[in-house]
Image 1 (cartoon, one colour):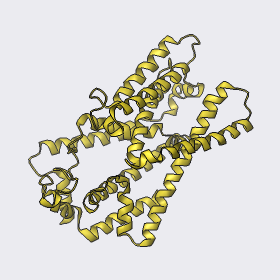
Image 2 (tube, helix red, strand yellow):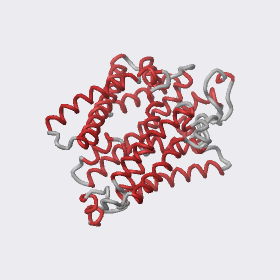
Image 3 (cartoon, one colour):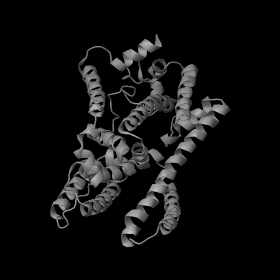
Image 4 (cartoon, helix red, strand yellow):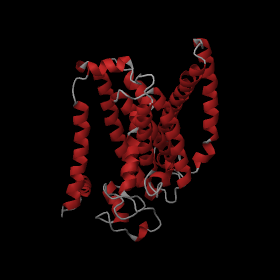
Length: 367
């Protein structure tokens, strides 16, 4: 991750040295105010307000933006890679430090990538698969050794993520399905079947390659995130904070919600249409999925009271019973402060008669 951050930062600096400061470079295409397209921008994918933080692309509605934010943010607490690392911490304090460190690092990296993407929209006209922006600009801009380092780091990061999902996916199949069917399975047998299903999942994933290559891995990832978040986020919240949640409700809720969400994505015409297009009945698919999941989990749990057992484990119940283990509300304060700050900037920009804050900051940098 550090190599990637250093690589994209170096790329941004090289682009700045070659093509000038961001504001000066983009002003030739979107005008000094960011909303006046020049003749040189006619053949590009730019639109008025392209460099403004609070101007949406023409095809995206506010409803679609909310759906996209949900799909690209809530996946972190349900993503197996992040969950495994957070739960492996020695203490709540260490876990919180790790989460905050990742947040800061990824936030910085995201800003740099947004700026690089804006350069790419001009320097790489006609590019269909936006996944290639960084790699293409790295090859054209950085020296050979720098390009090799960045490409290698990106490949290593991808392999790390892929291996996590291969291991976790096969583990889930063996532990949550096969072991339910055959509870007497030995550790040796579990290991054997885990290896088999690791290979099976890998082969199935490769089979999806041709379908993903045309639209890009980012769009494919958003599609997976829509399914995961619709299915898992309500389950996590209810299992942690609602003692009446049952295992039967979790099983059938997951199965029905994931199947229905996949069906809606296919029916509307793909991932982009699912969140940025018309959606299903003019509502983004992820919102339908969340509504269905909460309804199923709560409804089935209330009906399924035969065993009287909660999905919440004894350890989880003990943690919430012992108030000393939750030391403060720092997380809520930090995240709430971030959102309040963003909304404050949005309101100031909306109602201020002065130039947009973002452009004033860029002009200050340029001067």
